[in-house]
Image 1 (cartoon, rainbow, N blue to C red):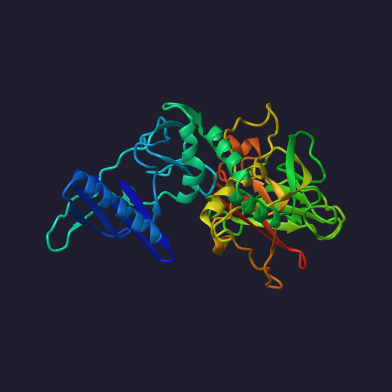
Image 2 (image 1 turned 90 degrees about the horizontal axis):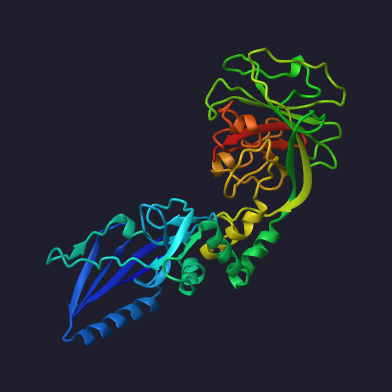
Length: 426
């Protein structure tokens, strides 16, 4: 059987064919609609084979492309998964099942599953057939899969098992040598901006940067209270600003981030306080019932970071997947150490940093830079705090802080020293 897809602009069409002895079955139509079918009965099986080949060649010439590996050919299928079907690498650089799109931890080499051919005509006036929805969805990045992923199985024995990470590493090595990989890498390098990545250590709090603990200079009159419940907010983090840091404010500034934990994370009230002068205010301890996180000192190291390979900046799907594979070495988090950092597997998509590009902003309407309350101009992305950075948050001691395994994003207006802090779940 041959499955071909045509996708250009708003046109997304399917065409499939299969040969059964002297009969050639075809099915065609718009993806998501009921397909039409037609059966050709030839005089001999040889004539049917020739007709089948001619029909397939004609469709390829008109712009239709493959959607799956050839049935029976060696490819990678999901191992220990409910769907023993082909796998693909998605636009996040992860391995997924082609049926349910779930992330996979392992694959094995096996013949590509043979799918049933398009069924015979159901009516004489308007022959049609409806295939299961999962069979009508093209595998994302089909050109990328055909070029880099599935061919790797041909050099391996049937039944060979690989971890998803090992297969992805092999695909990445092939991509790096290819023109698509070079083009994707050029885009990544062109989008690089300065970033200060955080490493962390539990212990004596610093006067500079930290998550938790107590703010260095904040007085009682500056400590924000929730406008809904009236309770003083939880102090989340303190970041140093000024020349030589990742936050370009004036010398001596400190930025303090707060959140109220009496609401779910999506509706929680948050506050940003920019220290207005360099004179320390008298220390203030919040009410006894306000959560206080153990101090986690942050140290930032300057580096560079490319923009994530999102759809809106790399229109070519194969190049977008290649960029995702090449990006991930930049996106790995910094571990605190074996005694304080819980074990985590796989790659993560966000980390704690100053500057760079926000990595888990989910929608353009609420993920774009908010406007300054004074000058109304868009604020500048300034920092990102991984919700899993602090052991108390990872253990679930304070589950509502910093979203659901996501991150907090700080935006600033450097002219008016106004701030905005928002959360996104993973």
